[in-house]
Length: 210
Image (cartoon, rainbow, N blue to C red):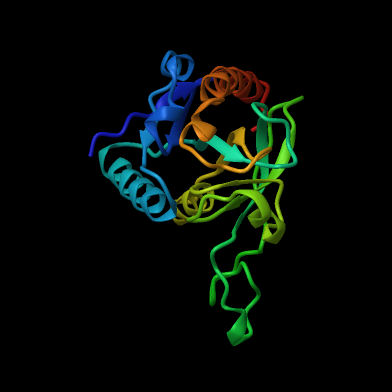
């Protein structure tokens, strides 16, 4: 498996994205991400295989960064946020007495904190799951933004003792989703702003903030 690790501020960073439509010209000029495919299963499988391949081919990255879009009906559309925590909205073993949002027999909180090292870039809690959230479905989610991969990426990173940062641009959520274009319309704006966030991450790393 051929995995490219970028160098940012003299450190090895593996950027991870789910879908090609999110990988626009501004990000293409800066990074070469691992493209996992959409959803938690593809994300965990792809990153786990990639990290195992890196252990055999050379040193692991110093940092993994999850990049892409997210939905929110509370946050500014088109804006970029650092994920201050991530939760898994799909898991619910509460009928057996386990806490909703916690995997049985695993020691993880409902909301797992993530590093937010970029000064001045706002933060928000992130929820990962296998469904597209729209309209009243937001009512059941205890987080400000939603997507499909970051919790799965976190679990892969934890297996290899690697830190994970989540950077997400809000592509939708202010109105109900009805068409593919409802998701893609803001992706060019998010591409440019995520690229700026990557630049700011490099500055934060040089300053020793992570």
